[in-house]
Amino acid sequence: MQLASYLAYLADSDLRLVIYFLLGGTVTALMAYFASQGRGMLSAFITTLPLFTVLSFLLIYAEGGSKTVEVYAKSLLIFTPPWLCYVLIVLLGVNRIGIFKSIILGVLLFVILSVFLEKMLSGTKL
Image (tube, rainbow, N blue to C red; front, top):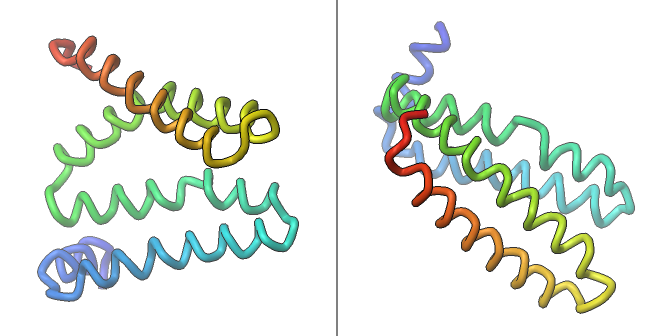
């Protein structure tokens, strides 16, 4: 069976959301496991490895086709700068203001920058 056949089968399957959940959960569990073992570099590598986007691209393609993947990929590029700011806030804030406050501040900044960028680029054809 070819990849296209697997993707078509997955798109038609009633269990596809369960499969999506299990795939995402497996990657998340691996990331948390390695981080708890003091292997932060490996955990970060797993988190930033394009595995989530590879799965996302394939699953979005199965659900909506190539145009949907194109819109998703362009949107990822728009939200990358706010995500980098979020990570930087957590990095700089965790020892100064604590994990919860730094995450809240980072997420708040991520949302504000994301909304700003989306509004700024809403009329722009990427």
